[in-house]
Length: 194
Image (cartoon, rainbow, N blue to C red; front, side):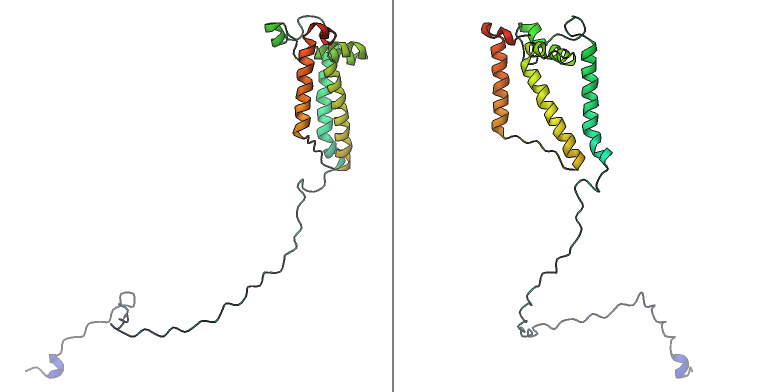
């Protein structure tokens, strides 16, 4: 007959901790709710102290004089090369430049008709002929020269150049161009035609 020590079956080895099932407390059914404890009012929020940062200038660090003058000088170079070409190739001779499409189709002069001939006359130092070819273009050349000089001076000083016109000025400019176009195509305005 086996002894009581021998009658026992071996005990199961314990489970590793990864496979062990944690014990979860089960809430009691119909348990009384805990009384609500009034919370303290929130402390007033204090805005953080302002942080002083250096704000970068919209153009980055100051540019050298040469870099500031590069855009207006580049525009001057492009305009000067175009004027040189017009000064060397006479627009009064046919075949060098295309014909104005409006004049070709309708026989009417657009506001730019005669502009190349006026530029040729200005390049050769003949302002009277230039005004006869296209007075509005000559006025445009003068306005462009003034705006360009303002641009150069302001760029040299490191100041931005912003040319803003009120809508009234744009309407006035459009009205002048329209009036010039109409008058130069009428019999009494033939002196304004090229």
